[in-house]
Length: 241
Image (cartoon, rainbow, N blue to C red; front, side, top):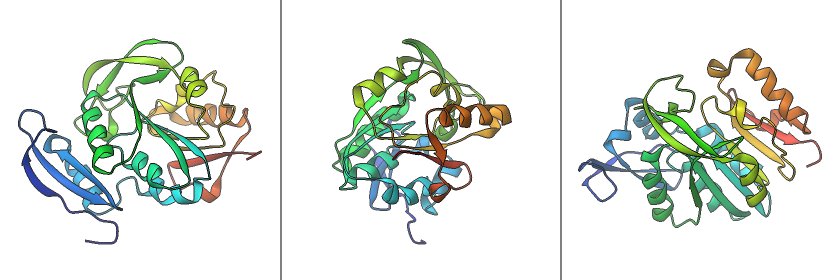
């Protein structure tokens, strides 16, 4: 195994599995996961075993986190980035938002194993309260509200993004929602947020969507931060931070 890589260890069927699924344990960058076999598509296994699972975000976290940071992780997945963020001693609080209902017990287990206190919200963030279709792909990394990659349609509650911002008062956002980033920032006030680490999905939102996204964030004082950006992982920092 290379530096930062993880090898899956079969644990047999366990309480975290559905339908007696086998559970596999991975440890990556000091973070341990227990994942049911139904989540382990070839690309997910390769990313974990070769150590590149969410590597660009993980590489930037230490430099980005400042003292007293309150982090809202939107599209938390299996909880890797949220756990890394909470283990950083300068972090005050971490909140994880995940729409995929099959990942909620995985998130809870990740936080439990790694002994971190992270608040979980099972929801989609949007403009208005209500419900939204969410498409669960076999490859959980590309599940989305857009259904761009297809998947099982489920219905998930929508919480207004502005409400969460006002309640949590995050200083940092981490966003990976497979094209949902375009609508997420429409009409919200990001007062108090100092930095946004965002995985952008140009294949979903298109060039005009990219332009609109950058314009929305620019209008609230955020600039493209070259120091902490890599390919599709883009960091925006507030000009006054």
